Length: 625
Image 1: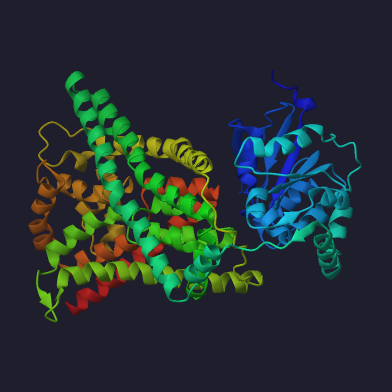
Image 2: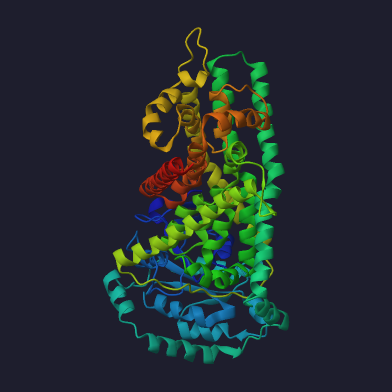
């Protein structure tokens, strides 16, 4: 029975990163959870109905170690608890890490100052006990003045005590501290006195110190080693990259083949006409352009969740932090950027693991600069057409060196952009740049149920939010390339008479300084849907005939070689190093940033960068070659 909205109570779930807070949230709410936005901010919030009482809604807040926050993500948790974003919660469920109580006790004491009803979940209690750590939960409860329950969030029995405590929490019978007073108390806190209080509590409740097993210490010394640590990381990242880039290929081919077969079947059962064309080239092609990314997204996030849940991902971020900090990023940016070489869509989605909003936005900005697999058909066509097949220095192939140079140009541009953005942000805002600070959790066996649940959440978010945008825009693009139909007796390609053809001819003067022809301009319009479509679009414009992708490319090579010239070909390559992203990437950027302004700003920045790069390449090469 649905509870009356007036009688609903809202309990805030708050804890440090990597303490099992999300697992506990899933256990307390089951599958009855929804994702929304905090009012006025761009951070996701998860809200679920308590499984034992439908009148209680639990809100999962971003992870933080303290209410005295330094980042916008952490500030969301503080402002929500204080009632500055929405109504103040009726009670608090605080999650503490039993294996590192010192790091979480400070926030427990800060929360107690607010005067709200509170229960503390002492999570990972089983891991703590297995490693010799004994905590007197009853004594801790007495010292804090709130219920403290030993919890194993990964099991149903392990959260029974928390469920009972949550059900018994009073609904704001206490008189909470008002927002202004709470902020004043937090700002005036004596950190040294607070830490002394934490140490005093620890002396009374911790009976034995935790001793990490020998295998854990050896593994830590190995994965954090300045030499062997990088070697292990390189192997793991090679495995992840291989999985995202190669292992997904058969599944992606199967999806493309399935939608292709579906389109052919519809063609045979429906009469020719506009409706058939809409369904085959608009609806089915649009759905295929969304679902084809699923294997890469699923595989990438499966690895990220597995590495994160096992405790390795924070160590990888720590290991790479010094290297990436030179360009203004941190270790957390590495995996999103690595996956960008396969596809920018999972790269942008995986940037959500970055806690610093500025670094997350910069990572999203530069991820499309890295050469994704969709560019390779364009690169392969141009390189084969204008770069001779010859050996350089007796070892290297000139065409291979050209492809390497394109990859290197993308990497160098991304690093330079991140460096400049860091300097601009520091100069404009005056905000001190904080180094990467994170808690290294203990190694543990991944919770596969939690991984599968989280993986499904990410896949579902992509399909429901990004998929609808991609699908709608794909239909719009179909209309642009399909209407109006060629006039009777027309001899040119049908696309030349369409709206896309008209737009292509209109924008030709804009791209004339780059050496681009009207055929290239027209081909770039359907290429907005996906970069690899450019080759097929060029085949259509140049009327090389239908056939396989390889057949179209082979037919285009002599045309490009004889008609474009080296300056134009080099400019086209430079354009596609930076060219604004495909629809899928744009839709995911809009979804992840929650900001149309940021999406348009990133698109405009890459467009200007692509134009300038192509302009310089064309103008310089025209004078040299």
